[in-house]
Image 1 (cartoon, rainbow, N blue to C red):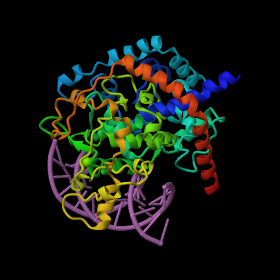
Image 2 (image 1 turned 180 degrees about the vertical axis):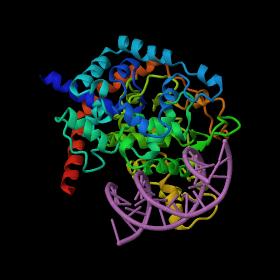
Image 3 (image 1 turned 120 degrees about the horizontal axis):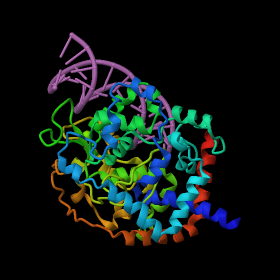
Image 4 (image 1 turned 60 degrees about the horizontal axis):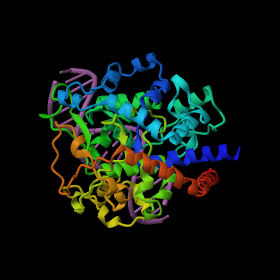
Length: 420
DNA sequence: GAATAGATAAACACTC
DNA sequence: AGAGTGTTTATCTATT
Ligand SMILES: [Mg+2]
């Protein structure tokens, strides 16, 4: 009994920790098991303009059809799946039980699983526990009520992160807005019923947030309206951090560096992101393990990037000065403030995850031209074995920090309750 | 209460 | 012309 509890607890912590440290990817088998996370009825989708063809774009190996074929070739989905499913299971059976444990212990909604029905939603509390009062479904209330809630309650991600996830999940790492809409709708059915303003918000974010860039039209998709959007590698670490913080606030316990060495940060390859499922595509998973660590420009003028508040708070508001996200062109204080709020801010925060260095050189779609970052973008391809070892290590490590995690969770919850 | 992040709405220009 | 896209500004809420 004790052991069981321990395992369960560790699994919870590990998931948090893993996300905090790295990958948001889901093995294909799990993905298939869960099916479309959305639970959005087909007819509902047809109500949404432009949704009919979205799925194919995202799911079929080479999503963005208009992208150069090379990108398709560079999307070895199958291999990644093998990697995630096979090797890992063999070499890290302890993670395997974790995985299974998660699936069993936390109402996996099955083929109709909603975002909120996914295990991780319960880990951090309910779907949107960090967001609105609407998310009152307790982890004990499963079934329809739960699904209903998932449709009603907002995903606990900011638009920036939703966009980021969408883009990162695409094989080419770039998507037109329409497909971003599609991805969001597909993974977060909440928006299918939400007022249409969210699309405006998405565009607003793409435009204002420095983390997202348009792919040069001549290089990317050129037919049709609009252009492709991608994540600026420069700001990617910040988005990753924001994702970690936003979705796993408890993970901030690990944000204070040396306590948990990077070794403890190599995650298992499967992860379920709250309500979303991610295919184990080695080329497109939300792989937080490649923090592209790099840097963000130190130039305040270029610092219009996202100032992931979450990050910042975690790292104790150190460099608020660097935050002067003044966009080129003078803007008044208010505006600069606004602009800043939409973009991540470079802090010295990514250092925690940086050890392995960026991958993006190899990952960036050939069609996308970036101003080459000043910082060297060495390609660091950590060996899988290495990762697995580290993951195992982290598991052990986590066993020791479990109590603190639970403690912090309690306090967070109680604080929220108090406020309400 | 100030600062900040994020959401939302809206106006507008541009492209197809 | 109309729809979709992208940019910008303004306002509001929540959090720290
Ligand atoms: Mg942008």
